[in-house]
Length: 361
Ligand SMILES: Nc1ncnc2c1ncn2[C@@H]1O[C@H](COP(=O)(O)OP(=O)(O)OP(=O)(O)O)[C@@H](O)[C@H]1O
Image (cartoon, rainbow, N blue to C red; front, side):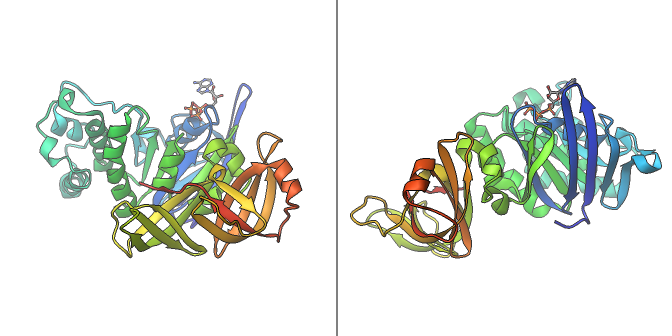
C-alpha cells in the first residue's frame, strides 16, 4: 500500500468498545472495511469524516491534514473534501434528480464544478433520470444518484457505508457494475463498509478486516483472503480468490476451464470467450485433501499442492489448511481429526479436491 493516498490513525474509547486503527490509504481503488456487526466499521468512517472525535488521531488524505491531534489540528466535517454515501440514499423528495445533484454545490462553483457534475452524471449513467422525481426511482437508481451527488462535490475521498445493504439481490446486481466502474476510473480512494464477502471478492482492491475495533488483517484482497487468521473471522465465507483466464471450453458438457497460476479449474461455462480474464472464489469448505492421487472420484478438479500452514478454526473440531498450489494459495477446511489422521504438516505434498468453484460476478 502506498502512503500517497493518505494515512488514518485513530483511537476512540466508548464504554466497553475501543477503536484503534492505523492504516495507510492507497491513492485510489476500493478499500473494503469488513467485519462483524459492532466491530467499529461505521465508527471508523465517522471518525474519518470528523463526525465523531477520535483522540490521538492523524487523518491525512491526498496530502492534506484533516486531523492531527499532536499539532492541535481538527478540520470541521463540512470543510473536509469528502463524499459520504449511506445505506439508504437520503435524497430530497421535493426535488427532482437534477435538483438533488445541485443541492449542496456552491452557486459560484464555476467551470470545474460543472465538469465534475457532468462527469459524475456520465460515470453513474443517470443522464436519462435528471427530470425524474426521486419517488420514481428504483432503489439502485437512488443509490447511483446519491453517489453522483457525492462525486459532484469533487471529493478527495469517498466513504460508502454498506451502500447495497438495503437493496434486494436484483438491485444489487444492477448497481455492482457501476461500483466496478468507480473503482476502475476514479482517481481517489474509497473506503467501503460491507458485511458481504461477495462484495469484497468482487469489488475490493484492498481489504481491512476489523474485529472488536482493531485491525485483524489488512492488505491486498486476495492475500488477506488467503491468510489463515482472517478466515476465522470470515467464518463460512472463508476461501481463496484466484485470478485466471478461460483456457478451454467443453461444448458437450457446458464446462469451461479457467487456468490460473497453479493449474486449471473446470466450472460451468458462463459463455466467456477463451482468453477472458476472470476472478474465481473457492470456499475453504469446498476443498478437501487427499495424500494420494484420488481415483474414481466424481470430483473433477484435482490439483497437486503443498501444505503451507495449518490453523485451528473457530470451532476446535475444525482446522483451516493453507495450500500452496503453484503460485496461488487455496484454503481447505477439514476436521482436526483429519489433519491428525493424514499427518498433515507444513511441507506435506497433497491433492486438493475442489468440489465447487464460483465465478465472481
Ligand atoms: N452512538 C453510539 N453511542 C454509543 N455506542 C455506540 C454508538 N454507535 C455505536 N456504538 C457502539 O460502538 C461499537 C461499534 O459500532 P459500529 O456501529 O461502528 O459497528 P459496525 O461494525 O459499523 O456495526 P454494524 O455492522 O452493525 O453497522 C458497537 O459496540 C456499538 O454498539
